[in-house]
Image (cartoon, rainbow, N blue to C red):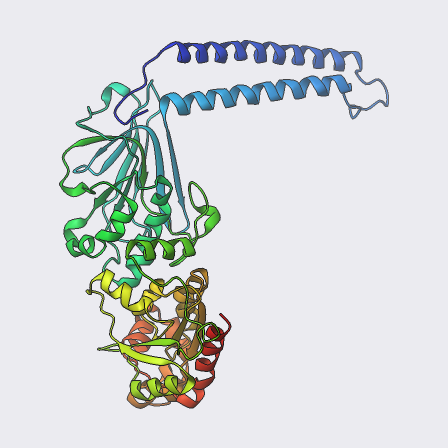
Length: 467
């Protein structure tokens, strides 16, 4: 059924109603018979003296009860299918990090009201859900009102009818941070919309606060949808769709859980393959010295310009070259063109950098490549690995990390060895995320001990040699 076309009663619906009625009569009659026979059974076999009520009823009574139970379940199934076909369906999932709804049937959207309405074919119970159209429910964003109407006559008339399904999401929350762009929006959007094969319309809210976001990721969006997006905040139309997904689901940080993907399994390997197709990236496999004798694997050392810097970058670059890499130092900027940056990263076999959003660029590395994450001092391994370790493995990359010691941290010099941030990182973590961020992420630089770091570089090179 196309959006905006309400199913009218016809022979098929009359036949369905008749089947419901017949099934009800049959099940009701069988239930009355069962009650009568059970009463007769206990009247005949009433206990006398020391006899017990524990004696079971006759086997044929159990058989009859089973038949009646199955008949009732079948009737319920017929009824449920009739409701889905005629009245549509709203399925909302409000668990984990995200709230989402799948609305199927005669679905109508109103952008300025930020509402999604299911119009039933017949009188129905009214229900309403408030859904934040972002993958993290605690983000401060305007919610979408998802409503199943009671009276079909109360539905606003369609002004635009679409033959495609739609996905409604917001560009907000932490959008603008490169890691969150991918973890919170782009990966979940791929999961929500890839099943439609491009036949999907994106309904996007909150655009006015992040107008450059759509410019940066235009090619990505066009890779998933053949249609122009709708700016919900400026849209005064009542649009009708056959199906609308409200919100984006985040089941795993910066990754995908294949068995939870609607419409069939997808993985992060599928996601990175989609990126290579979208940005026409030439390399689908990392270099291997075994396959290409004399060719050195290329390593990108990410330069950070403000804070959380590697203070001895030239020394680290020389150490990587001594290990057997061809090295280039590069600054990856969040405001750079996505296609150009994707092509640059794809030309490398390994990425090395201090924990930060720049490591998100590993999505463009060819499969079989290596990510080396330098983890700042301060017991930051759990956070660093949650954001990059499993995602990298899910992409088909080898993940390695190097944990900075207190002696390699600038905190030793700026705060002194007796400061709690140096002497007792646990106390800083107990003080909350604000203190953790300020001391270990915003105010810390590192000077890598290249002798201590050498085994990590060798492990990365050995991995590429085995490819």
